[in-house]
Amino acid sequence: MAASPPLLRMEQIDKRFPGVHALKQVSFDLYAGEVHVLLGENGAGKSTLMKILSGSLPRDGGRIFIRSEEIKHLNPERSQALGIGMVYQEFSLVPSLSAAENIFLGHLPRNPLGMIDWAETHRRARKSLASLGVNFDPHTEVRQLSVAEQQLTEIARILAKEPQILLLDEPTSALSDTERETLFDIIRRLQARGVGIIYISHRLQEVQQVGQRVTVLRDGELIETLPVEKADTDTLINMMVGRRLTEQYPKSEVKIGDAVLRVEHLSSEDALHDLSFEVHRGEILGIFGLMGAGQTELAEVLFGLRPRSAGHIFIEGREAHIRRPAEAIRYGMGFLARDRRASLVPAQPIPPNITLADVSQVSPFRLLSLRDEVRTAGDFVRDLSIRPPILNRPVMYLSGGNQQKVCLARWLFSGAKILIVDEPTRGIDVGAKAEVFGLIDRLAQRGVAIIMISSEMPEVLAMADRTLVMHEGRFTAEYQRGEATQELLLKNASMS
Ligand SMILES: Nc1ncnc2c1ncn2[C@@H]1O[C@H](COP(=O)(O)OP(=O)(O)OP(=O)(O)O)[C@@H](O)[C@H]1O
Ligand SMILES: [Mg+2]
Image (tube, rainbow, N blue to C red; front, side, top):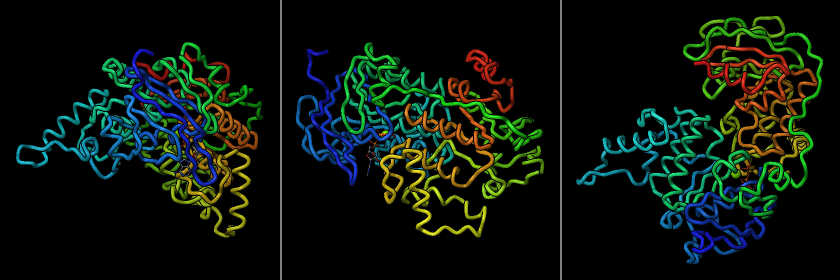
């Protein structure tokens, strides 16, 4: 590898945002045919480094060389012309256009008369989606696609441009195991063709699966670049957080009380079939299933985001009629959605994002003064170590993990009795994960009944007092804490 010069070399890249030194003299290189993994906690600067390379952010200092040629000025067009393609962490698709239009946006296939060739557009879109293992109709509007389908559309869109340098910013956080494997196959095929790939992920096991080298950033600083053979999980965690993590899953013994939520024979049009269960005060009920088993639909029905076709919901013994989220909130429910972008107001700073919600509808007389709002938010920011702790900056500038903490803070603030969390650690780093679990544990200690939906087995095994396994909209097994194993969970989640 050392024989030929690198495909890409970034030297001493520096970048500041108001109040944040996001990159401090970071150097990074990439060889043709290599997968170079970029790791770091939320806010470490990974996306910023990639955005500089894709031309969507200017750098304050440092030099960039592509195939040994120095590139002084980068903007998105230039970057693309140089063969750089980036799959953004927060997608850049146009929701109101079809998947096919998105994939070929800006270079739609045309017929000899110069008119857009729709048949060809759809044929090619279908083909590129199929190569990623998905078969939905490319006419579908992007806003109607699931998060995983959007992610794959985004990847198809970038691959259609045949990049020589491919930047993947957390491409697998929304994908199922099968979809992930398909993506890895594609990565290997691209590698064989000499494409260089920079791969950002919070899943440490992926480092060994796809990478050749790994670089760790912490607080904008380069910690080290290593071949993956030298990078076992413990070493990586150490480098990322700068300390040993004492407790990844802080779960305490909590006395479990009366049932707060009881669900009887709940069904919805297509996704849920005759579900009955209870959740108790102080209990963490894990719901495990593979992606698409109906867990998210269950959460949405409970929270009034999706209609039920049959069944009853009882809260503290009384039947609850929930048709809208505002009603669910009034009954004391909170919901941390899988897709946090749906629940944040991006252009608003942290305080209203915490106190807003339909919280005002819970108690119309509890009007918050602006000062109270800022004070409350300040407490949460400290408690949850939201970084950077700058209250007046729009939340869209927070890194993914820190946005997740803001969402969680909202439900802490609303004083929910029942909290549903759907994949609470999607896209967040090991340190933040431990913090989020610590919070969930603290809520349980305070008597909140928690429904924790997760497709991460270690999470469920470590945190849940009881676990229900879901498959095709039905419960297939129930385990008390300590009874379940990874094998049992998987077997019952994938009964065929
Ligand atoms: N456009 C922006 N304006 C102001 N600050 C920003 C902007 N983009 C990023 N930041 C800040 O720069 C730092 C690095 O953010 P970045 O998004 O690169 O982190 P990251 O490593 O990608 O984190 P994550 O794993 O959560 O995605 C953070 O403190 C973030 O709040
Ligand atoms: Mg990022």
